[in-house]
Amino acid sequence: MHLMIVGAHCGDGEIQAGAIAHKYAQAGYKVTFLHLTAGEKGAPPHLSAEDYRQLKIREAEKAASILGGTSIMLDHRDAELTFNEELVKEVATIFRREKPDFVITHWVNSMHPDHRICQLVVQDAWLKAALPGFDLDGLPPHGLKRVFHSENWEDMDGYEPDIYVDVTDSFDAYLEALSSYWFIMNSTSFRYYDYYKALGTMRGCLARTTYAQTLQNSKGLHVRKEGYIPGFPLA
Image 1 (cartoon, rainbow, N blue to C red):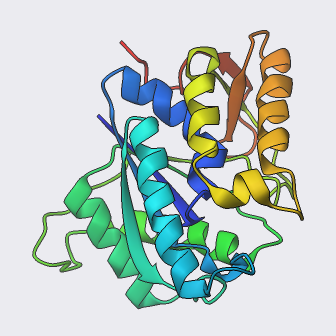
Image 2 (cartoon, rainbow, N blue to C red):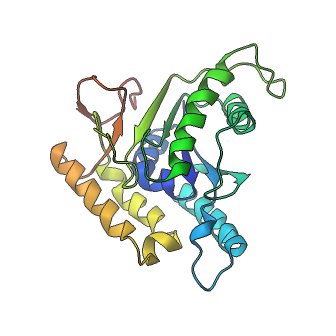
């Protein structure tokens, strides 16, 4: 089984679902982080955007390794994503090549346009990867089983989690992975590390466990508070 986490920028997927990723990696799942951009436009004063891009690519590889996965980096630019057929086919081709069983990505509403575009690309790529009528590098069709949305402080408009995953045993590895990123540990505009550590604690309280991360399915489904994602047990 293969879990793929698709984020608009290096760091997005890790902060949103890194503990879930580690839990599933420990259970024997293949885990892949797919980054559409590096997120280089937020470069610190001492680095150019290109130097920061290279740094974030290295940080993504380190974080993925800590979480038991691998990192795939696409060659698109931060804050310049556009929803177009070329990008959809690029991601659909990756879906066919890597064959993920389920994908976690951004929620549908966000203050960041790259996040909104990312989840749209995932939804369209899901369809195109599965349809035999699309020729994508000669690869055979591959259909995802499910797509879930994860929790990001920039994507909270309408986000109402209906899946709580107990990540208590993976939370230390999650925090270690977060600490791999310069922006998480050094941002002066948002306290990323503190926020996501507190968020895991708060979600854990609601799930009656120590730490939890959440996902949202389609609206109207009943809330699930279990040790795994519904439909994807660990054993």
